[in-house]
Image (cartoon, rainbow, N blue to C red; front, side, top):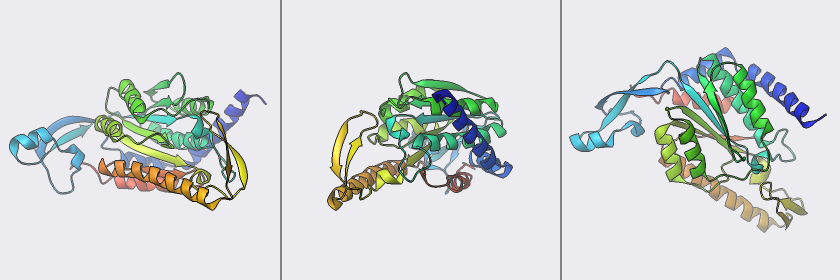
Length: 296
């Protein structure tokens, strides 16, 4: 079986999974979670307890001496952009993982696409970590879901991680109109609060962090050869050394914690997943949380 046939088999498998996962109830939860997106400015009003701090207009607040928030009205049509990391590290799958991180991302992307399409929203795709960067403009319709899954799975594994500043600029260049942006990545790039803040200011940003347990906690597997999936550099290591495993776990935890600190400071709600887990319960919780976050 050639590569194209293998990819199409995976596309069909993921499509069936996504259709099964995306029930009418789930699609309704998606709608309630993002009913305040695709917004256009309407007016100002005084801040009230419970309002989202990111909607505060600091210029008006400074001029009047009283906190004011921006009011928006919802557009009929929303645009959802899936910005997916397809760099080499996303093609990794641990020994106990059925899917690579990229295949997991493709399934999650398919569920989000079906949910959006059922609500009449447009969906687009931006692949980064590949050369050249691939962009699929947002359109409506079920055919878009199959196209999105196919493009994600077909992405070359030779790409390197882009800096988050580069990713942010790519999204801002392609999406002139305010959109819902799901950023699917393992976030192994260097944390960058400025780039994330700029992206979140212009769009409604939902980071989706995807990890494999094996890369967070190295197994006691003796002497092995590591291959960097992005640079192809080979390294030797003895995983029987508990100090080495502990140092790796500590470094990974510090990296994840720094990203979490940035998201918390910017008031960004993150979806944290691992490839061995079912992401649907986490998505439900995310939608339920977001349904309570709109300016009244």
